[in-house]
Image (cartoon, rainbow, N blue to C red; front, top):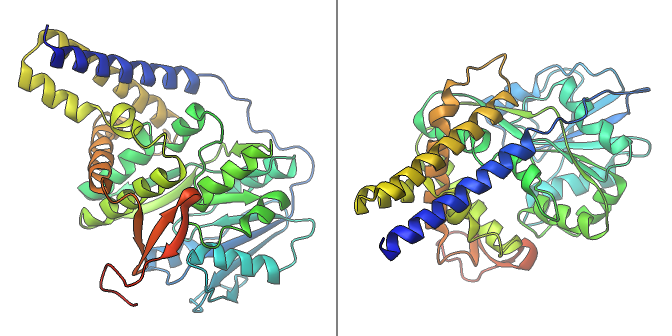
Length: 372
């Protein structure tokens, strides 16, 4: 057996074991969500700069929540909003404008006695999501995050994005189950305790503020919970591959800044299938091919398990069988695109050098030829 085959078999066995452990952890029965007592009072912040038509539809959705709820859109421009939805004008100078919007809202609006939720405009908020985010914080958690659940993709790029976030190891349900130390956090939908809000004040110049916030809370021994209700993100037509590819390439650079030790695990554990299939075909080894078949089987079972934890009543599980492979291919392409560029990131037309923890420092002159 050649050294190349041995390396390939070892890689496949390692990745298969990683999937098996994740599957076992996801199969543990979680305590059912059972709210008790009066639902907490909630301040729901929706930071957005220039909402798309889809985001305006999301903002207009009625939220049927049993408790007291105030929903505020924080934006530099006043979008057309339904009655009862408040607009707070905000144009922050911080590099991370989302954090800037939130900090301004927290300084301006009363928060005493209320759980603060920060939910992106591309999320279709429901009363169930509000309750599932707010209740753990009201019970003592420092932070609660919801796993994004992209729905309704109509093109291949959208199916790849949905496959990555729903059916692969990059699903935040899987990431939460496998996190060692600070929990994986997605900033699309968060419930913030007073401790989390205090830590957020220092993150206006950070990208990947959700990761850094989780890290800081973990260092203080505080709990980060995962909502049982996902954050549903309607996709529709995504368009070209540039949209998801640029987003996840930037995410890879953020990961390299926040979790440099985890960055090499992306090809090793998260996206090994395509390179191993290519290697098996190239070398023609029956042993390696068998190991790759085992890996594909484990990844398919994991995808089906994650599909069952999403919305099995509304969507068939069939997309999971192929969606995970599309998602892996997207993440692998993003990782390759981030190689050699992990020290900088271009965001909103500006180029920043990334320092530990995702702190952004403006690069002069602009490497992109943008505003300087």
